[in-house]
Image (cartoon, rainbow, N blue to C red; front, side, top):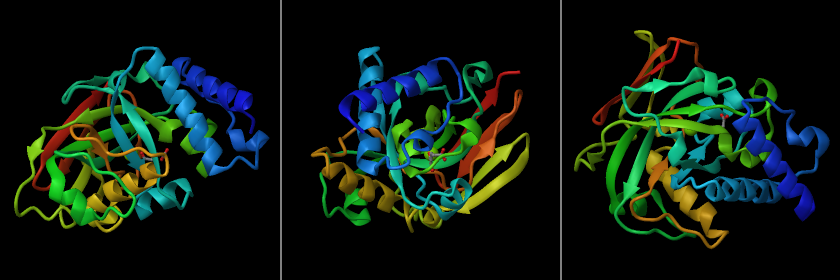
Length: 261
Ligand code: OOG
Ligand code: MG
């Protein structure tokens, strides 16, 4: 794809989000779109959001668990960015009318006390500099028709990022084994999805490590203080108006929101 087409595609994705409009996936017209070009589109899209005055909360990994890979039929982890205008307060309301076809998933986020620069970073190195864990509900809202995409499409679309709800920031407990921690996603009082931390690449810290290594290709690093989402532990669940949603992460606590009616 040439530079002009990359910019135009980013603009199309940007407008689809702003106007809550589904679009046809890019790979329908550009079946040869590469992962590298898809990240270039994502960078243009990030640039448009920064120009609008939005700030980055932190990077996110996606498609890091088998459940998510199978559900979306994409076999490779990806990354994107969470912006400050995506924040919904814990216990707050998600405005359904602002979104296209939102889904929710339960995740674990990390906050590092030091910058980490790949390549060659391991999960152990991430854990050694982690200051906090946060239980997270991420709302994803692919801009593509029927949430149907291929790997380059979802990368270009900032990994379907839409909204995020953070639970309380928990100072890294000494003995918590996040890979064994159970994670449940509850909607209207019913457990819809359940998993353990090891569903995310064996340990959520491995996801953050992989992100550090992926960012190194662009001479970028994980920075101290930013919130790093490690990817849905379980499959994502479609949201309906009026839903009451919560997630529980063993050892970290709860996070919740309500969908507007
Ligand atoms: C892509 C976003 C994936 C995750 O946690 O796996 C993601 C999608 O499923 O639309 O955020
Ligand atoms: Mg996610």
